[in-house]
Image (cartoon, rainbow, N blue to C red):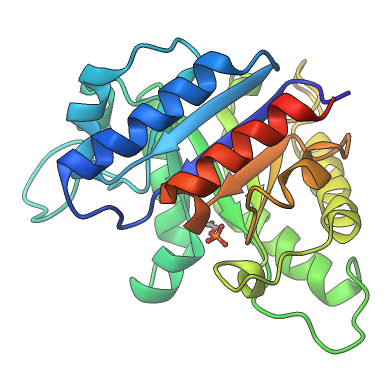
Length: 261
Ligand code: PGA
């Protein structure tokens, strides 16, 4: 039995037109409408498609995320999008620290920390991406090196940050080598790390009434392997990238949710 899980779809820099974005979104709406299972679907389209998709939305169970944000609310920051603008568009979630932002735009821990603060102080929810760059030959999943990388990323990103509600933070564990490579982490290995992340969060937010936060797995998730992650108790959902704008994959993903219990 799959309990209520979160499915986050990161469309990245796809598709190229509003028309295509609307067509893809229509497939999501149809599929979500037919799904009886307890899932929450969060879609992160490009900034330029957010507003037209928002107008088309007819499913309560679909929520919007942005793929990034700037850390200040207004001002002379050419090209940037502020949390206030996202809030005005009724975006609820913001992906922060995606590995592609870290890699191509030199986003560092300080920027990520600032973005998290800005998002939370505007009443939006954070989807924080973390994960190690590589997996060495014969390396055991939860060894000291990997644990250190993951815990350091959490420490820096969440330094000094006060979370008021359990729903305000989602962690996406995405080993970089698994993103867009077709080499998904096995559900068992992902589970090992995700258990560690849950433990870290419990310790870090020990004084809070909520015990932990949702922790997702991301990296080459598709219609074929999705259920193997959702079956794992500690994995609270998945972050899907490349497959999320492919019509056939979207249908496959949702049909998996209908078939397996
Ligand atoms: P992928 O991307 O599913 O294409 O590996 C994951 C992501 O965007 O984080």
